[in-house]
Length: 266
Image 1 (cartoon, rainbow, N blue to C red):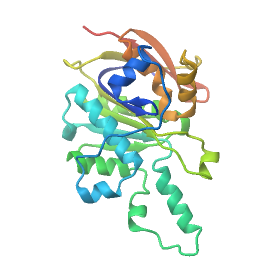
Image 2 (image 1 turned 90 degrees about the vertical axis):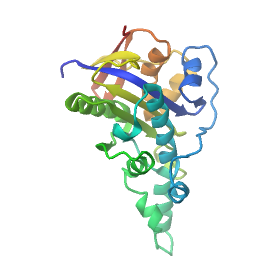
Image 3 (image 1 turned 60 degrees about the vertical axis):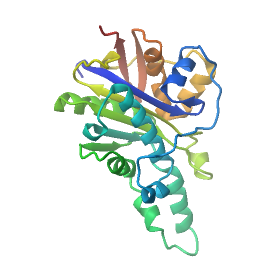
């Protein structure tokens, strides 16, 4: 893979103890200690009431991070292509469906079935924003953030238009939690652009690498990085929060990782 250059225009971040990009910057720069806490999300305002009642954590989380990133980038939500990258999708909904199928009454709620597809969050995003732009939904287990970023970069560079990456994970209830122990919901969104704009925060240069993945220097943030696939983004987010140049290596495939050089722009 040759070096892929892309500009970063906006960031959104919500997770356990991370309530939006501004507060998260204070944590990632060390100005504020990290305090683990349940993930809290803002109210979903732009969905019609009927849809609002049906949505679960993945939709609320993706809307929160996507709107925040687009706001920072000054981007028009209705004109952003999107890549939704989620390891497991709607874990609560999957759990409820499996409970129903294991019961004596196997009649499945149409709403449950409707929300079971992996691209449900993308559909609700289109309803909320009025967007008719291309959208891709993918999953790559623990490599989901890196895979989503590569897909979004590829789309932005091939189309010549900005693209919004929304990478998010949620937690299974027991007993599935014991098999896939993601402890909490977390999501990160990036508006990436093949062209530099007044909103550009950094230039990213992506290459594949066999170097070891970058760890977080703080033990609690490193534990978070290892426990939630979307949190594999934390070393990159820390560089962005600190507004400094440098390189990080993110986990991707077993023997292949993603090197990202962050460069300041003028």
